[in-house]
Structures are given as C-alpha cells and as structure tokens.
Length: 254
Image (tube, one colour):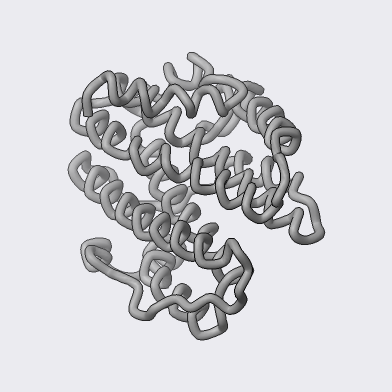
C-alpha cells in the first residue's frame, strides 16, 4: 500500500477520533518485549470484534436457525481461544455453512446482516493471520486478561431500544477506528514483516468503522453528532489516561 493511500485512509479516521495514540504507548509497543502481549491481545481483539458483530446480527436481525449457524461458525475459534482446544491451522478456510435470513422487514435489517457478516469473515481471517505472525515469531498462544477499553465504552450504552442498539454501533465504530489508527502508528515501529501486515489491515478496518456509523444512523433515523461526541470524549479519556495494563487498546503506560 502506497504512503499516499495510507494517508488517505487514515485521515478521516483521525478526524473521527478525538485524540491520537499517546507517544508513550507507541514507545512501549515498539519495545521487543512488548511484542508477545501486543500480538496476543490483537488476536483476541479480532475474535471479540467478530463476536460483537455476531451478537448484533443475532439480537436484532435474524431468526433462531440463522443465529445458531452463526454460533457454530465462531465455535472453533472460541474453542481454541477460551478452552485451548484444537489445532490453530485447522481454522484456515472455515466458513459460514448456512444462508442468514432476516427475521423482520426493518429498513436496516438486511444491511446489518450484509455488513456484519462481511466484517465477521474479515475479522476471523485476520485472527488466523495474527496466529501466523505469532508462529513466525516463535510466540505461543496463551490466555491473557482483557483491557479496560471496550468495557469502558460499553458501560455508557443506554438500556432501552433502539437507543441501546445505536450506542453499541457507535462503540463498534470507535473500537474499529482506534484499531485502524494504531495499526498505522505501529507499522513503522515493528519488524518489517509485522509492519507490512498491519498496513494490509488498514483498508478493511477503515471501512468497518464507517459501516458501524452508517448502520447507527439508519437505526436512529436522526443526526447522531451529539451522541458520537459523547462517546468520543469517553474514548479519548480511556486512550490518554494512565493505564497500568499494557494491551492493544490500553491507555498511556506508567
């Protein structure tokens, strides 16, 4: 990917976010001993992104049979990650085995299914690619704890519908946008092969946050600038405040 294309992709992402990643976080991430936890947490973030998209489809868009097909699609990845079962190489090429059918005729339902199924496919592919990078760098999979980041955003989601759905979509947009911003920031600091991998992720990650915002606007049927600004401030606080736990989406390290 050319530098001009990278700049074109990342510029709207940075405009959407209320702050850039602190230099102290990038400095910590660039240290060789940070690479294992960086890749392990990135791996789990890819699975969680797929799970979040699956939840949205199952909760708001499809019938019970389609929901079960989605669960079965993700199960081998969850077995590997949470139960440490199976061979990671067996995850290559796993695909959805059933057509996903909408359960209602809401104006956004089919668009939600289309966008989120594509997102799941891409996140699971990225999950496998991170495992390949770990293998190439002699990093074995092991369980690690989650960072405060996603929970810190989601605790502000409203509790009634459709506001809850709108807020979850906005949170998804910020998580994807921050991932994109960090990929771009990390790429020149990491070993060349890993940096090139992170650059390769920018196109899909940049589209993911835009898809979330499009869906949020469709569901809300109104201007969301105020709600987006609300979450932008929360997200910026999580990214810039001191954080004792270094992870892919953590704040400024001590």
